[in-house]
Amino acid sequence: MPVDKHINFFELAKAAEKPGCPLCRIINDRAERYIDNMLFEHVADRGFRAIHREAGGFCAFHSKGLSAFRDGLAVAILGRDILEDRISAFEKNKAWNPKGRCPVCLEKERIEEEYLSFLVSSGGESPEEKELREVFTASDGLCAPHYGRLLEGSPRKFGRGGNRSITPIWLKQFHENKFRSLLERTSRFIELSAYGRQEEFAKLSEEDQLVWKELALSLRGGGE
Ligand SMILES: [Zn+2]
Ligand SMILES: [Zn+2]
Image 1 (cartoon, rainbow, N blue to C red):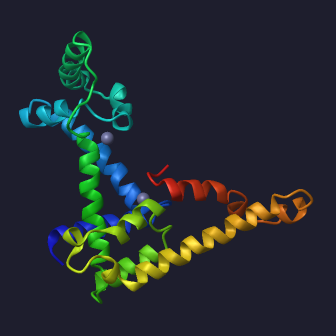
Image 2: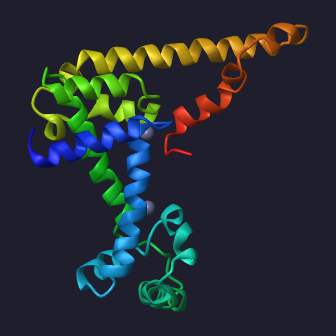
Image 3: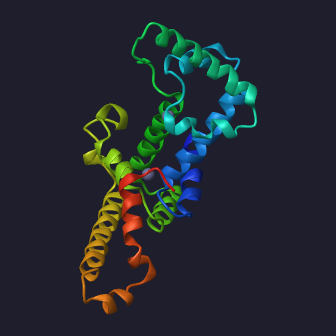
């Protein structure tokens, strides 16, 4: 296994030991580190400042943490660029339509592609691949958006012939069983929520009584 693949393997195996979609977890950790890194090391980097400005700043989701950052100067330098552009648009009474995309969102998509293509190529019989299969199938598995993206992967990204035909069978079976079982548990929850079935409802496990939370998280993705 090449070195970069080893990193993918270790990160996935580590994330799979924790609750929730392993890929959402990796992305959240990496996005945080990415912003941190950008703010502390690349704020003076013209290339990054230009990309950030072109995007009109970080998206609403990724700018949430900015007011809590340790480095106020970095936030001020980046923010000033955006405020200047905003003021100029206000003065011209022009709509605000930045052309670029949030640099953290772009990074997030790059990581997603990297890990999804890694997972899709993990159908072999090497000791690492076997171990990955073991830890992954013991995990909560991918959320619905990430599993959907894995299946939809274009031939350009995931190799010739489209991804559907090359999705390893273990990955497909594991996820489809998992989603089917989530559907059954949800239906049971709905059924037993009806009037007069309180006693049966009370016998459900705590997990099954809270299955709606699990469902919402699995459908939305993005982690806790
Ligand atoms: Zn996910
Ligand atoms: Zn973003």
